[in-house]
Image (cartoon, rainbow, N blue to C red; front, side):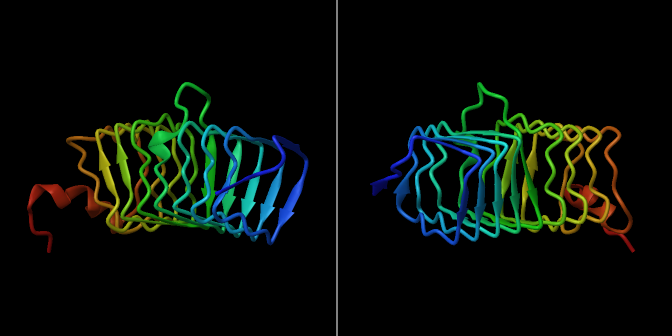
Length: 194
């Protein structure tokens, strides 16, 4: 794995770069744009991303151990197999995901208040002990995604689909759902709806 040569980058644009197998260990990025870049199997260990935009990027199997995200947006990205649970949780964690494909990712034990996953596909991913107060999952497909012991208070699931949320093990007070998908709240009760 090759080390990224620049330790601090500010207001820079990276377009159509192949960063696969590149180590961004300890690097800091502020107000940077990454467009159509490939980060497959790169390492973002202890890296910092502040006010950055990732647009149409491949972020698959990226190591995010100790990584910090602040006001960072992933738009139209492919994010597969990323263990966000390993991010630096002693820091403000704020990121949004829009119109992206997310699969096999772990968002457990994170404080993700007010995060937006709007119009995305989140498949086979995990949210356990995650604070998702006022999160926005509107128009998001949540196929095979697990929510357990999460705080979903005031979250928006209007127009979302394929979710299975057990209200006995998740806080759903004042969360917003739409019909007919709202029956996803009843999956754990082993009842028949006709």
